[in-house]
Image (cartoon, rainbow, N blue to C red):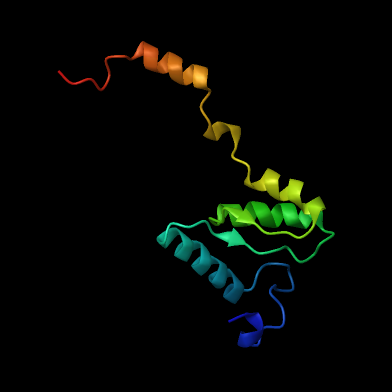
Length: 111
């Protein structure tokens, strides 16, 4: 079932915010994907030339739990990749991890 099946002619309000029905559909996709342990992938961003709008949208859907987006245009790939790339704060430096382990060798040992 698509938006047209609901009689929807648009997916956004006059202020640019997403219609509640479309928000709900996106939430159900994200939640359903998490329930069955698969990655939720957002569909294309239709305003092909609006790379700033794509950036805002991609960052939003990532916050909503989507793990990536589809595109058909090569110029959109860097914008999408940047939005979905893990933040540096999400990674530990390997040297930091090794040093932390070496400084706490006895932690977690039994006996």
